[in-house]
Image 1 (cartoon, rainbow, N blue to C red):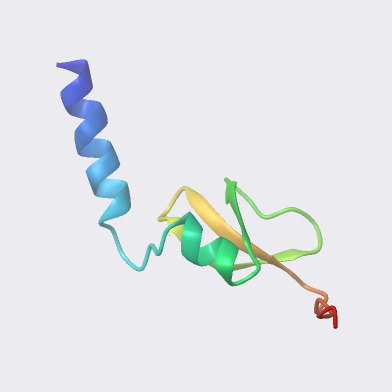
Image 2 (image 1 turned 90 degrees about the vertical axis):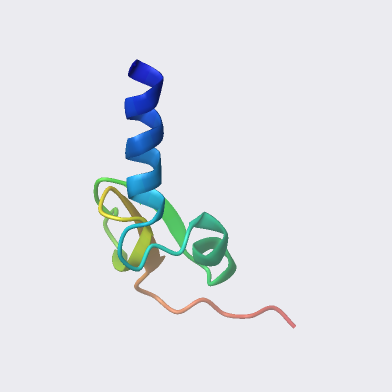
Length: 65
């Protein structure tokens, strides 16, 4: 019965809202974090809404040439 609850929670998190997943977050220069973004970062979107956030740096990154 415990595994059933785990599966239901996982499906709920992955199918909720505008959650895009960690691959999309990392591809756009963000990091998935649990709970809150750290100092110097802002919430860009959700990796798995509402618990795992996609945080991006406030300062723009420079591209290497």
